[in-house]
Image 1 (cartoon, protein in one colour):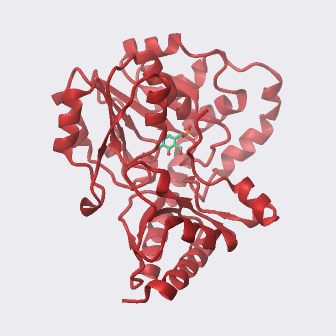
Image 2: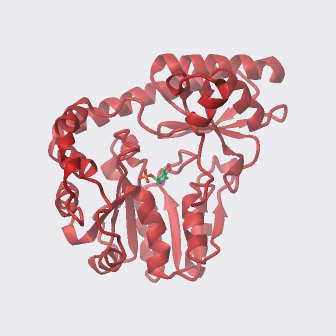
Length: 364
Ligand SMILES: Cc1ncc(COP(=O)(O)O)c(C=O)c1O
């Protein structure tokens, strides 16, 4: 296993000799308002399902996900989180050249390297607020057999419009284009951006239940593609990849449609307000640049007086865990990412950061 992920709350709790519950974890990009209560009640009542084997291929929950999104069941494969599918893809598809729109989530590159391919990163520029250059992506798609795009992107929060991605797929029919929509449910009107069901033969769409429903411990993800590609992937999946509670959760989430719509809309509204609050609280602090984001996290660049690890340390001492983005390829030691939480925690973190950065960087 490769380890390059975000902060580990348990390691910090050990270091500070405090319970993990006393640390505000702003390093993990999960919806602070989840999980939905109805789901937790349902799972509590269904706990005895762990005493029997789940469906070997998670067929029922896969059908529920497919129906909910208007897809053919054979065009969807469920995995132990989208992570399992990210690692499965390069192994099965046998790509000899891969491009990745970056800076982005490291697991696409790690998965490719494990499968023996050295990917090429097509890095967006800070001057463009990290919005990918579509011409460069198109050029990369001409040269590579596969192109990964995270939309919206982690850690930049940038969202590409559907028509651009459709045009990219259509212009490169011989290149597999993988679009990771794990954070798309955080975007109001997400369906208008989603590529699920767009019917493009070279497109693979990744979805995750971990982020929007705050269920990273259940491990639920999906990949959607043509039935032929999904069939190839399915042949290489281990049995019982998705556990019994995860299967129960998806069946519930997909059937409680109105409850989930209300939950997602309310989460998006509150996160929008939280983003605005964070921007306002730090607006006149010279020591930091906050990039526009449409998700639950904010990428920030520190002024030259600071490194990400200085700020990480100072915040860790205050029991606030953030993501030092130094190890994101295409960023450097001046970038941090903060995942928004409920209002009080955001205010505390913003006030702390403001005081810290204003102390050295000075105010505008
Ligand atoms: C962009 C992106 N995709 C996929 C994942 C993996 O999520 P999961 O395996 O929990 O579905 C993550 C996790 O942080 C992520 O940031």
